[in-house]
Image 1 (cartoon, rainbow, N blue to C red):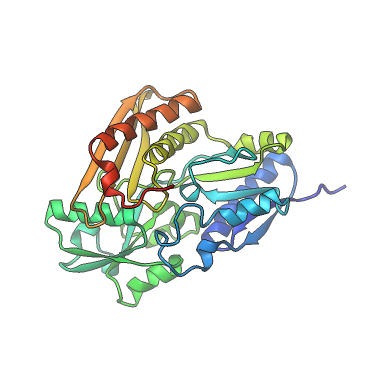
Image 2: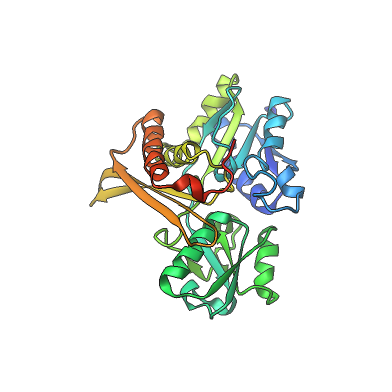
Length: 319
């Protein structure tokens, strides 16, 4: 007898469908059950406004969570960077699989690198975080660039470059890799130049908290280090009281001595979108073994950043 298929809720975009398809295959392997994708349109997908103007936090998530709560899907896959930092008690973040490349990348005309772009180059991005750091780097290194706010899917954004509207666009390496378009990258932005969004490159698999069997099954896909790393990053974001559209970058990574992992470093940055003011700090400590330890690392760094004036650089803070 064929087992009933599990229903996976996903956004309709090509990227969302691709990453959900990859999760579906993995879930089928660990559960032995077929998985069918249920495409759901979110407010963030249909709105033409800038993410910062429509709230940013949760605009790609709310409709998926509503489908979960109504029992229309069994679990959902989100890009973790889109997930609000507050987790509803009725939903479980059952798994955070191993993270893809968290870096931002440039897709530029004539296969140019970021630092080789001509004077006055127009760079498109919908992210205040990217604008803040690109402009700050340009100011510090004598580059003459203009950051241009854009919306749209990968095809639309890269199309701006192909059509000569923009000289370059900034995208997430993970997204391009997941849809098989990594070969279009012309430059990888070092995390020393642009820190990614908290949780960038990671996926979140969410289901009803009271479905213990499904929580346990999905948990087979969880990557412990990815979870503690993104927990620290998201704890920083939460303690700054900033939403996912705020100009906040964060990355937790391992510091190793040869093959022996010694510590975890958490870096964070907040800046004005014009790049004139930034607060960038880091903290290093033992690799967290628990969720609470990872949370504490993020709160510690956020407190230091707030003490140096980070709150005044983020515009209106999340409620």
